[in-house]
Length: 567
Image 1 (tube, rainbow, N blue to C red):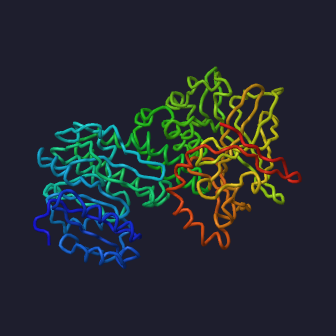
Image 2 (spheres, helix red, strand yellow):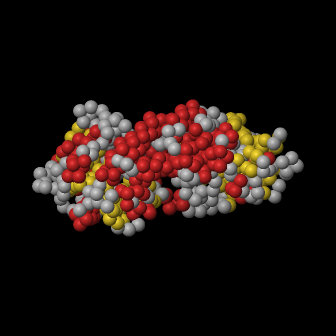
Image 3 (cartoon, rainbow, N blue to C red):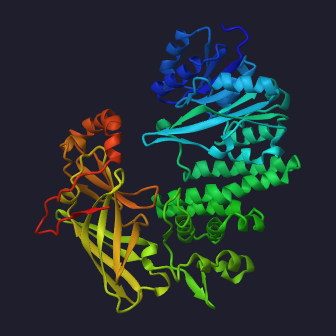
């Protein structure tokens, strides 16, 4: 057994034995010699449990393993058990699907010892097939020493337990442990640690790698979201009990300004009933918050919060669409209203002073900007097969009736490769204006229009290019969950049917309606997973490159051919 270890790394065992081995190996291969590993698994074991004896046997002096006596439903109880058996002067937490940077323990222990710190926070990096991205990069731009969280309240924005090093004597002195049952218990644990710590060090060094393939529960899962709200309530109450009202408001403001809009954007991929249930959960929490906090969250997040308070899932999601992730272009997915020369987001709050202030969007320029500068929202209301063809129809938002009678209308249904920017095929669309409502219809033959390889280009988004007079308007298409349900189409990938044999309609987390390649029969069901794993790294560069032109064959009976659109 390793005498007097410097750091105990508590690893929560997941279901994948390969990922667990990867996590444990990253802890054992630290540049700091005095590191021990405590593995904690769920009761009854699982696939990962079979790998634990081998991991312990390979480094029996540095690795110990324990199992919970019963299923816990979260990581809190497992981490508490790890803390009970930790012998290191410092403790770090590692999920079974992630890894530590090779120098993480040395960097953080050195920083803690030099400053006498109770807690050290390092940089977390999300690793995916598309590259790497630092979480909360502004927090970790430089090395800093803080005499308590009031010196740096922004640290509460990154309140996960991973990527941080805790002095074990500090945890024991403050009685800091995780809640057993709710998920997201680490958010409360870390907030309590920040609130109690007398010295906090922030290091810019990379400490933790969070892998996108590690799984996780979607933020729109009802049970997970309910647990998150419960943790938020407890965090706010804890901070207020410590007399830290500004910190409590910061945590709540971050939910309204960042977390809620992100969840609402991803809510479009859920069924209507799920959406309503989610918004009701959010409404119960937002209703508890101070009214001024909602208003201070920012223009569009405040609109989304007010729509949540009204229980309007459609208007809340539309507000989130207008605050896209990253540098994306806003999508206007709801028709504004005009009152006394002002433009407003529609809602029952228009009759209140708060509503009139928050919902006034006149300065966004929706009434005056060129139509071509807007990205409109469209809804697919019908998708059906007609032999080999697919008939698609729907509606488009007509903001303030700006597209009026007499406007020459046309357009095209665009099929966009969601993994290779610029690869777009399109078919003509028939566009009409009736009583102020814009409707459209298009026919395509997916088997001949798309012809994907089946690996890098396995997902295709549906968009509409609306020609209104001299203006070309981009329209993002989505579905309320009924038009595309159960739709399956045949497809012939260029890599034979082993790369997939069917197209399924779904709504992506970005909100767009899309078609993805799937395996329905043999040999695709047997071959496709292995082909994708083997080709993922090789095709990554090709997925970002430019595809050469080439018109796929048309079908003179079922509809016109799609043509590639150069972007």
